[in-house]
Image (cartoon, rainbow over all chains, first blue to last red; front, side):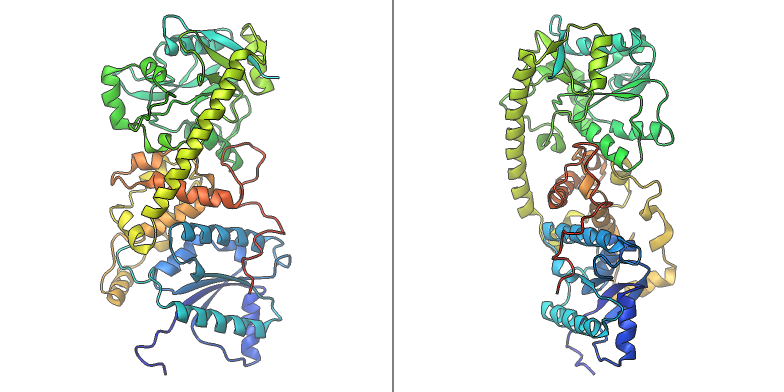
Length: 143
Length: 376
């Protein structure tokens, strides 16, 4: 159990059905340990994720958000992840321009066979976010 | 090979010259209808009107320094389902035309049978300021005093930092920058369609005329001045805006009326996500959220709405400033959307409304780009 005053980051992950979600499954099947800070949401394709959901998560208490998709070139729907990539780039650019923490928006391309990679990624994002501390976006009741 | 003609101005009546030209388009059957700003019969208000009878052009006031409705929205409403079947001219300000090009790319408007008439834009006042202006002044006076060295800080915020006060995709351009307006206006064809109109009007057409070149040079200088102004503006605004606290303060007065979205010419969805019940919750859920944080602002999601609008239309934002004018809480929306728009447009080297060929960044992609996204 974590100490009560220790900060446990909350990370909302939008993971594509065909690759990153499957990798999460594999990590579980392989019994690889990784932090429970990631709250996964399965979507059919990273290309279906409108930035509104990422912003909503960040404003509602998430300390970081993650978009997980197939490797570029390997999208189950041919080009969904390329489009996701542009949208994430845009969202990050907007955050940067507005002086918001764009580092809290993550993207990773992890295939169905990369269970180890998946666990490693969750560890990495959790640790990074822990270092960053609680998100100032999450801590505002009046927005 | 720029073809152009001169529309002679008599006794300083610039608006009348333009109206006469528009009238000739109808009377010579070059077009069947014209979409044009007209003074409302009840008084000083300017309304967009679709005119088929040349008589109604008497009250046309193309240069009235006010932008009540961004006409791209009207063209979109007219042509979304099917293009116009009869040749129709639309006379638009440069920002309106850029918005129209974006809407065409978004499949919300069709250009077939339209003749796009653009004009060098002297800018406009806010709706309120225009009422004060029009009580004492005429559009002719306004245009004559435009594009001078002096700063006109009374103009709408968007006009003060306009990137392109000249039409980029017009068939015909009414050129006024760098031209002696007492003598005449330049009517320049930028496309074959435009050249054809010049021919049909039986005007004395010149190729690469001296006046056209004179305007070109003046335009180049003006664009450099505007670019400079914009750079300064971005620097300054970047300092003013920054961080959650400042952003939250800027949008604190937002009442979520969605006016900005309603008037925005490039907010293209037929049904807005924020009008949908997606984020509508049952009472207990609101109570739960409030309990978690101690309080929640109601209605919820004001900042979410604004940030989402930035991600949806930032890349197509033409900087017309209609959002800021429509905001009952006087939130400096233009400032923020131009700042944000400029940065995402730069990311994809995209200029909204520059041409029909450049693909809209959110629907296009390249395999070899943005490789820093998703890397370890």
